[in-house]
Image (cartoon, rainbow over all chains, first blue to last red; front, side, top):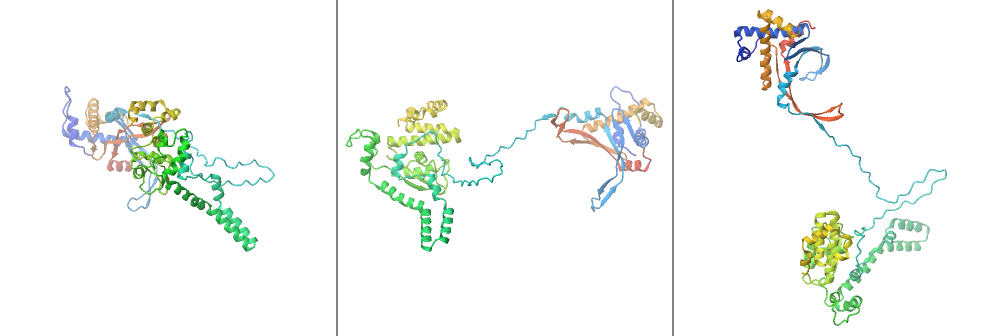
Length: 400
Length: 95
């Protein structure tokens, strides 16, 4: 048994102020030998050697266990054996761990697992299950779910689109009618049944009738389109007297003082129409294309709230109705301004639910086009939004 | 074997006083601990080696508090007996 010479030297150096005999290197070597030998002896005799303020050497029995040869992977049985274990004294442990002594164990708050939200079924009216009884249950027809086109976004605000819808030839097909039309399967079934039982002539009549039902929406469209075109293409002089009487019956037709009546003197700047959304389209660009002013885009959104969900996102193949613009973009008539204000108000209401930070700006724009919007929708505008308008001084800018 | 027994045997073998033997033993393990404190590994040839290793921080459960605890990292001492010591102990009579 040998020991590091450096250790011998270290051991031998007496501390300051101490007068201990300096031992020879030979003696120190023998000291190391005896010390380590004594520990070994103690382990063999007692199994434990305790050295005060240093630690305990101990023999620990490890049971027989199964292992594997790491080179070949062959299974081995490792026999039970004694293992030498050293447990340092707590003083020594603390001295060694001084670097991390300042760190303390912390309580960690683990997030509580949350119950998942229960997703409600999409149908509000499911057939109710009757309690068990002896009598056989009645057969409840399974309701066929027909998706309505789109629910109107704003139920609280009502707009009077009737006039423009007439002019644009816009016609609403009710959900009830759709239900009748969109049942080709049942119609086919009836047709087939009757074909087998009836003579050939009547069967063909039934088939023709069924095909007519299927073509009904197409026919409707065909009927509707010429009306719309004729309305649109009609010269302004024809339209003018009709609307003038409706809107302003007290005034003479020769000198209309009201701005609304003035609209129909001249042909409108943009006569309305339809637009099929292509990839890459957006309302800003469409407004620039048709109205020559991108800032008028809420006018398109106003007429298409049932088609467009988010005014910032258009889906391809959507058909947009482009409303009439009565004056050119730089000389908007009061009616145009009213429409635009309503459009911006719709955008404002949409943004209030989705993009809150943009909502006050939309309201600001609405007021800028028509300050009256504040009175008509005063119940829907909060104090904060009014404060925003005041801060940004709309009233001075509004008279543009 | 206790320290007193150890010191008595050591003094007898080296033919020195027990006080001196106790002092030398103390200086011996003091030197080892000092080296361990500075992060060194001490090798005693034919007997074994000892050193420190870092125990990483970990999550544990305190049953008294019934709380999860984050235990900080820690330096722990290890002792590895040499092959010779192991062989000697295996060959001799075990306690």
